[in-house]
Image (cartoon, rainbow, N blue to C red; front, side, top):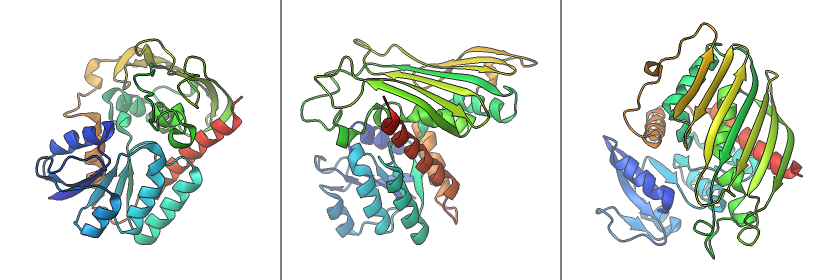
Length: 321
């Protein structure tokens, strides 16, 4: 039996709780949250991370699902106390923070796992496959559109959300996964330009609500990433359009879960090419991490990838006009 503790029982913490409860041979052995309700399904709860650490309850993995600004300090503390961790995005707010975590993990031979559930979307897995098999050929242009709504229902008074030092910005909180999917699928990229502004949310937040990025892939293609949380009332669109040497592909859906267009040379697309997941993307993400727990070495390449991703986000904000 694998024992997991959840640190932070907010929106994402509750999602992890539900996902973990559906996985065989895994149990939640502790919940750590200052507003936790005592004895949730008879699970031991702790009001603080210090209380948990002093309890010496044995767990195999701690899931960190607290507000953004707490991720680094809590991850560092847990690693220093010898725990493997899985961090909800954003994993840190600075590349230097991620570098520190990697150093501790290596010294103590611990593992850091990352919340990347969209990678496990069947449509994205298919896209990754046809890209790696060179069915697409060279990507010429990748356009990602995330036109979302976040308003006063989300940015509530006294919340950490929308505060620059605590939230970081929409590329950390809303759109981090989509930058990951671009680099995960198409490889390394450098920033060419970044423009951000705040239109609708000037009285609500200290961060941008709209931005346009241009990246250049190491393979030579271009990426255009348009994102906003300023859409009125409800989300409007999430899509990825790919113009490549051998044709074009469009993926849509909140979690990139539908192939809307596939027109590729010498390739006939079928829905059978995309296998249905047996469970949620988040559960698959967790199962992947749990399987890797038994590995003798940490995945340094994956950790360095995420350090570079966080550094890219830092550079985007630093360079934004």
